Image 1 (cartoon, helix red, strand yellow):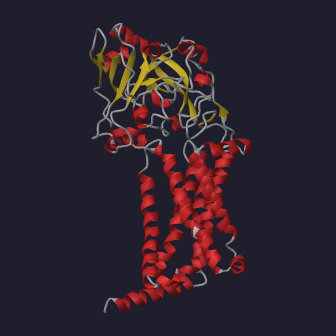
Image 2 (cartoon, each protein chain N blue to C red; image 1 turned 180 degrees about the horizontal axis):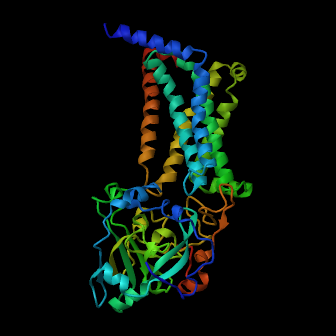
Image 3 (spheres, rainbow over the protein chains, first blue to last red; image 1 turned 135 degrees about the vertical axis):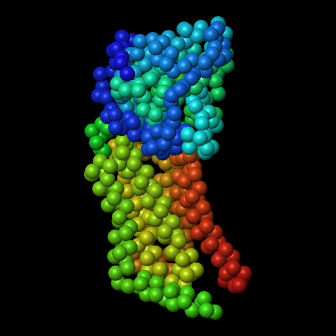
Length: 268
Length: 219
């Protein structure tokens, strides 16, 4: 997948990129099972072509958009983002894609649209995890419209210079680098514009543990573990000290103004 | 009656095997095997992308497995008429303590970097860690009172009372595991251990009830 270096502020961290082997073998993608190794093992059977994304709700141009058209909608950029999982580990991943805002502008949301909902494929035939009742399928995630319009919010089609491996959410996924990883929906089949805050999958499963915003925040602990530190995958072996987690995963300069005046402990 | 004779003969043969002087060293080696495999995997970088977490989880899993094994001894001993199995009880019990200690060590070292202040704050703050730690404290009491000399000093009755705490350890360990998985709604494996330990504890309850019905005055 050909791409240019991104010029978006904050889009190219200089930190050491995680090994492709780790990034493509240690995944949370519960549609394929809850073990970290399950997605790499079971996702290969997922057909990702042809693929369509349905755009619906409060927009002027709803409809089905083919993957080929989405790929060409805007120039593919390389962006190197930190990825912080809510479980307390992190990676650094070079993604390929473009700002989601390019797609949003094209479909022209109505003035009444306040939120965007992202729906992941839920096919029990090709996704063994969907047969279990770990979550209420399909997997739904959501953003406030201004969060979705932020230039760092990425619609990704590839990583490490290649198209996305299936376990990482092929053929297209969201990457919201200042939020915990689960906010970035994978293998997206539907994008819906609404005026109400979406009911997201993890929030429905455990509202006290996973809030709608889920911004990375070292000062707001998960009820069952601290979020103050994180383990960078592949960094300095088994006995390496964990590193300190940064507010908004280190993207405070870029995204802090989105949450000006908000109580981040209440809206976690 | 034709069935009983070979069964008894089989039981006698197995019993003799369990009494063999090499049976204990063999069991000892088998119980150390999981640790050897984990250390080997850690040295050769075979624990996946997050080796620290793999070690914390595996040592916890092996604690639960050893607990299932030690609690299975009495039902097996009585059900299959293998009195020699009693010889293994103390060693298997100490292996529960051993893997629990490794589990706590991995958490304190790999997860918390031996920051004692952080650990002290972490334990009361998070119920699932508090529950796990409580189970470990009980296990310490059982391990400390495991030498024959201590058993004699305490007297059989008091010692047995104290060691019934292993049932509380089983309950706390299951709660610890359940709480850890509950937030991610991923509790299938927890139910497997709950079923096994539930059966082993239920068997004891049924036996105790029968015993009391026969000898009500023994209370």
